[in-house]
Length: 252
Image (cartoon, rainbow, N blue to C red):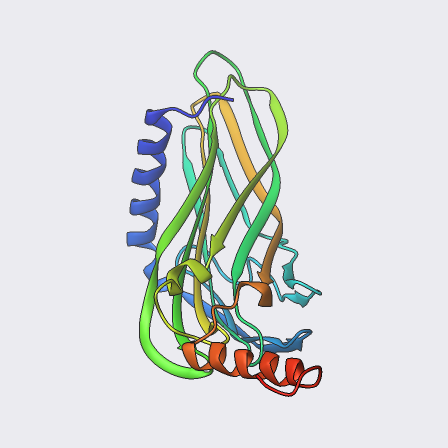
């Protein structure tokens, strides 16, 4: 697999041109609320949008024991005859819990791609994924939004033509780390999520390129072992231990 600087620059230029000329195509689908999913995770206002193509691209999500599963059917970029194509989609929603923390989130996506043609000049494909998280509640109380640094990852291939292969991307983000030094008994109980996802295909005169997304999964980890108790909670825990000990001896 070869992922060159020229490929990145070409994709960036194609994306910029298409987005600027297709803003009028922006559309949105609100799939609503999903959950609560045990141990009590709710996904609020799950919405997908696109500035390049009609929606749906991701399609309606299905709740799973760990999060949401999407089965994209039309999330494809294809190009032939020295053209370029960009398909850009976004997902926005909020994660809400009440008794367990939103400790970690992850994304997995994948699909397949095709490069074919005649001659040495390669076609190319690209997939990009970015994740932006904002904590808006701690211990079920609203807080000044805490923006977690954006995470990004990408895949690209411009190998010589005549290739069909799978591709996949993944992101993992720890949310508890953003609360270090912030007193709390539960942790983050509401997090806003913004996902930007794009595919692009660029061809030469005698080549074709296609890349398709066929799987997209979003997962939430609510690990109560990562809770950092407040000082008052530590005191209550100590008192409880003392009371238990008092059953065995007369003083504490």
